Image 1 (cartoon, rainbow, N blue to C red):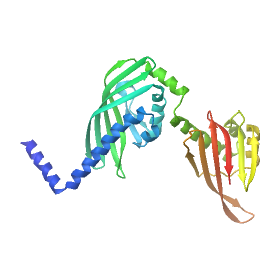
Image 2: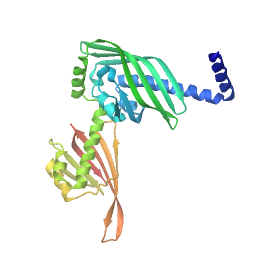
Image 3: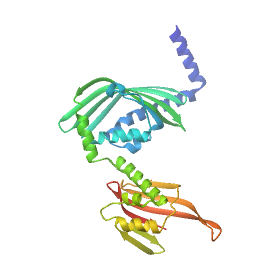
Image 4: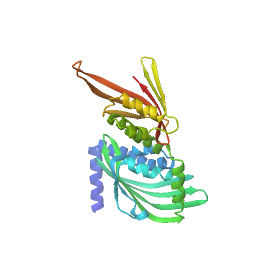
Length: 293
């Protein structure tokens, strides 16, 4: 009898508010696509796109697989962790099925079955389990706020991980190279701003670093970390704290733009200073700098 009453109430809701039903169907479709995409994007090492599926802070629970505690991570920290292992496999495949979604306004939960295969060399490891995701709706977009895996069964050997980690270390994916490039360039610009010669020199490549500056059709060129460091110390740039760092298709290329205000006491006015540079890196060191003004 209770089931009949609930069914009647649901039908009344749908008749009175068909938009509510349509919205729920769209939400369910979007959430199912996200759940499917997590596995597909991980298998194709597309961490830039995968990162965008997550909220700014995620609760990650893999205790049934690897022990430890529930962790709170940023999307970048989670992607960095995965990108340090998964690209080292020859092939991974996450087969997702039986997705169930429960959406309620701006929050939702989804569960799914997963069979994940991992191949590297002659080694193989398969894990079967269940994913549970929690979501929040932000500006019509659903984002993952919690990601839990429950282990049900495994076969093969976990020795695959040691090999995969070493492979990924020897041949890191563009995702990791790109973010390491961003970190190096940020440190380099801070060293220029702080006028710290040891830090500037320490971030320049030992192997023939090159500096080029273009100003009013005049090209100033310096070769070698010592000459470049001296140039930055003699001709200080007010690179400013408000900087924009743009990544490129080549993960070793970074375009940086900063704007600051220069005090010109003798003119009794302030002038805007724009610092633009294209920086090429090798092995996390600055190899070439091209400044534009």
